[in-house]
Image 1 (cartoon, rainbow, N blue to C red):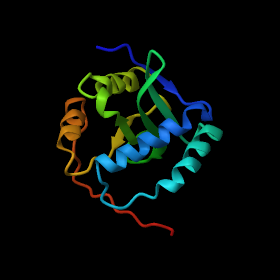
Image 2: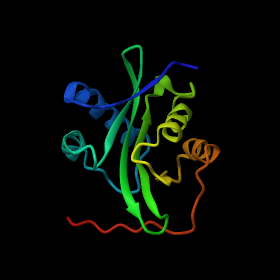
Image 3: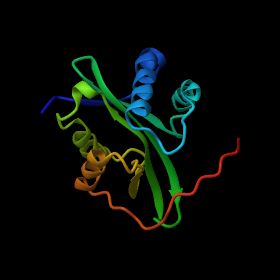
Length: 152
């Protein structure tokens, strides 16, 4: 397995590469609703300026970035503590099938950023491969449905 480091993004040095990966995520796995990627630079700046609101984690091996994840903490009464929402998770196509995402989940369980009591993520119905991975590392489908109302 590769020697991957999971490194919090701390400045804008890799912004262009992260934005390219964000475009790759949404072009590879079409979301249920359109995503306006023009907002992505502001999301990056917000989490860099306010790390208590979230983090971008870069998946790095020998100075090469293989992917990224966005982590967002929120408090849940239902779960009795902080939930770690994995808002986005992407491994570049040429880096897949190397165990990087599985290593990332091991990293989250070991390091427990934001001291969560549980992790949550979304997966599109068509992304069967990702769903199998998530289930293999302990995620389970809940019966509740996610409803969204935009302020726009």
